[in-house]
Image: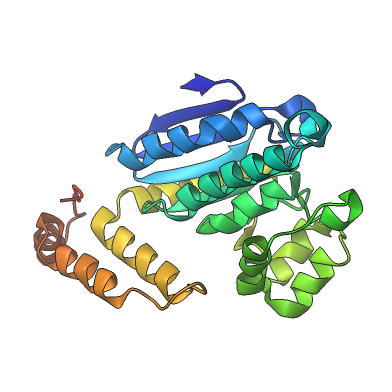
Length: 263
């Protein structure tokens, strides 16, 4: 599927969503923000999709943030600012609440909104050529509470101050050192290979088990309310009563690869 500056493809249970605006280092324009809610909803509803990879077109950027050149037109007045921000929140909530595992495949710039996307993914893989930053203080923009919380949960308060207050760029190796990313691949070719390997492993795992685990992790990390323990238990009970639970035991006993169906 191709939609404006977004591309979505699916193969063997793995969907890849590509931010396709390489002329502007895959910056997010308003049209992309408008299209993403429905696109993410389609991924959530697609039973053929078991894993989502989020990446950027070309080899220079994952996503360089928002397209600031549009701001006078789409983010100039107070009402426009509120609409733009609400649209961003909608996209980020849908990505965060996606029940399927998500992987950010990062090569090049990962700035502002791009870093926000990456932090919302379950896994972040990058190359030494990657550059991470929160440039808000250098652009006269606020960095919202929910965005700062994402950084705090991943790299802690000291590193968050370094990135948000200092606005300095962090290279791929440094990002791996401070835990901002899970894996540092030595090259773009290695990055593609390692992400494909991880996605393949996730795609053949039990979907209901993955969903229950992901939701439980997210609930445990909530800051806006207490964890919904009843919902976590409901998902766990559904796993125990599923066909996949039977299949997993049968495959283990027969010493064969299980064939999970997500039911």
